[in-house]
Length: 440
Image (cartoon, rainbow, N blue to C red; front, top):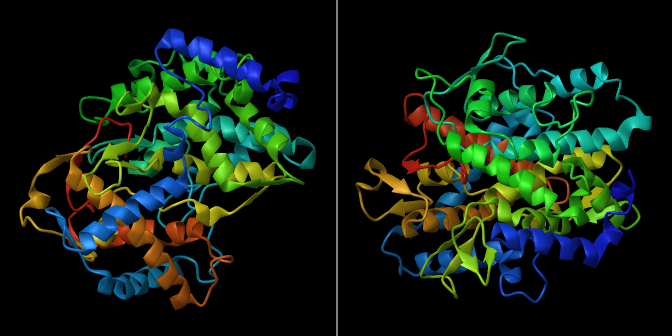
C-alpha cells in the first residue's frame, strides 16, 4: 500500500483533510504545536502537574490527603520482593497489554500470539513488518477496551475452558474477537483493524464477544462500544497517521518514517497517539476546541488542570513489543510516567503513602472527576517515580537496565494486586470509583 510508506509525506494535506472531517464531527483531530492544548499532551506535563499537586499536599495544603514519603522504602521492599518471587532472574518484560494475552492457569502462560502468527504463516523475519502492523491492529482496540470490568464479570476462554476475570479476561476476550476478524472490514483478511469496521461496533457486538449476560455484567459496556466507534471515525479522519482507507496498523509505517536509524523516542510515540487519537475520548474538558482526554481539574495545579493520559500511556507501553518486533528501537522509556489506576494507586494507598483526611473516604463511591480522586492519581504518579528508584536500589539495577515499564510490570501493579488480596476478600481496590469504561 502506498499509504503505508508515504504516511509521513501526507503532512499538511492529510492534516487539512483530517481537520475538514473533524469539523463536521464537532471535534478537532490535529493539534498544532502552538495550540494552547499542546502543552498538556505530553508525559512531561503529566509529571510536572502531578508534582505540583504533590508539593501542595506535602505542604499540608490539601483537604483530602496527607503525604508520607517515609513509607517509600517499605513499599519498595514489598515491590522488590514481589519482583524476585515472580522473576527470579530479574528478566522482567514490559508492563503492557501483551501480558494479559498470555494469561493461563495459575503459574502458566499461553502464547496465544505465537499460535496466531503460526496459523497465519506470519513467522520469520520476512513478515516482521506486517506482523508489527497486525500487533498494532490487535493492541489498540484491546487497550481501549481495558477499563475496569467490575467484580462480577468473567470470560470463559473457549480454547482452555479457563475462567478469567478483570484485565486478563478483557485481554483474552478482545484477543479472541480480533482473531475472529471482529475488527476487519476485509473478510479474507481477518487479522486487521479497519476504521470502517471499528466505526460500526455496537454494544451488542461487544456483549456477545465478552459473554455479557444478566448474571455476568460488564461495567461500562456502552462506553466501551462508544470508544471503539470513535476510534474508527478518528482513524478515518487522520490519514496522515492511519492511511486511506484507514487501518490502525498503518501507524507502524508512520512511526518508521519518523525514526532515525531505526530509533524512535517514546515521547514521540506518546505524542503521536495523544494528538492522533485525542478525539476518541469522550468530551470532557476542552481547550479551544481540543478535547484534553484524561485531564481533570485540581486547585493545586498552576492552571487548575492535571493531565494523566493513563490509557494512552498504557497503549504506548503496549506498542513497544510490536514496534521492536518490526525492527524499531524505542528509546527514552522513562519519559513516560507510571499509570495512575487502582492497582498502582491502590498499592500506595494501602501502604499509606497517601492517607485520606476523612476516615470514611473508603466507604463512599467516588466520581473520577472529584478533586480527591484527581489528587490520589497525581500522588500515584509522583509516588511511582519514588518507589521505582528505591526498588532499583533494592535490586541493584540501573534505570537504564530496569526502566519504569519493567518496574510497573514486575512490579508495582502485581504488588498492588497482592496487597489487595491480603487486605480485602477477592482483592478489590481499597475504594470504589464509578467508571463509565473510558478511564480505568
